[in-house]
Length: 324
Image (cartoon, rainbow, N blue to C red; front, side, top):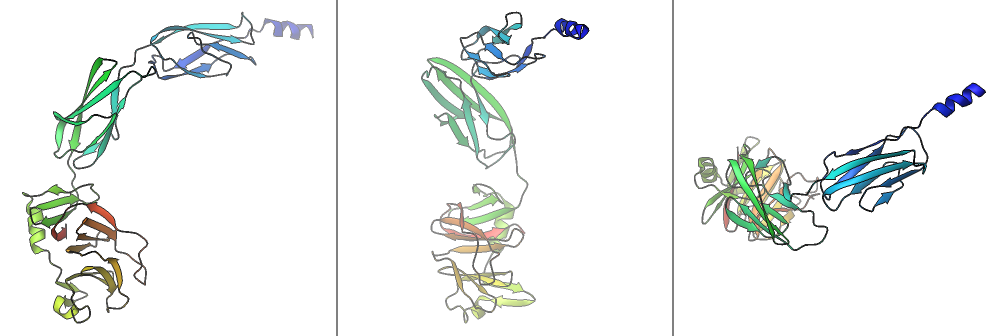
């Protein structure tokens, strides 16, 4: 018994801690890890007037500087560890919503500003030398593939100007596209892309749009002609056949079984152009409000479980075509 008591008396409690990140900045949370060998009560002093009784707390410093951090275990002065921690000044910056960038897709850039005292802040976003925004966030897209597209944020905090410049590699998109012809120009929109772009010099666009028509189609070895379908759908203006159903323009956009039964309206607005994309199972059509799309796989009674989605706001669309 005497030997055991002596061994316990000689065993020392070690007190230590670490913190991460090792070079924190003002406004950044610092995680403290208690490395003490034992103990039941902990008292932290972070050197800026803040304290904690958690075993392993976190703390955020508002100002840069050097702070003395003290950890006391079981409220005993002899069980104390002290370290100096340097907090660095916070440099304003901005972050992008993605790390890979493609042309004609939207990306959001957000200013990252630590402002605990609510100083007046102004923002000026410049993309390739053009001012595009004056708020804390900015959304833009790039129209050309570039090795070095420049995004600049001129940020003024309490009268102090910070100029933050970053460069981004903008990639092209090798993908199928939907093409549109209007009274003014031809356009393309990459499949699942976010907007239409002019395609004046795109030979594929011109070729597909020149060939596009919805007045005749060969389906299951039979040539369907608009004049023949007019007997079943009087006044029909154009049609496409897919999935054993016929999608047709007759003022609005409609779907029916291949035998003409079970007619259901998809869009009763005046439809000026339409096409089918069998690869992605989509139907595209245009009305006075823009170009729309929807999966064309419906139920047996031609009811759809999805609703039309606006693809773009192009007006006066006369033809729509999809990559072969």
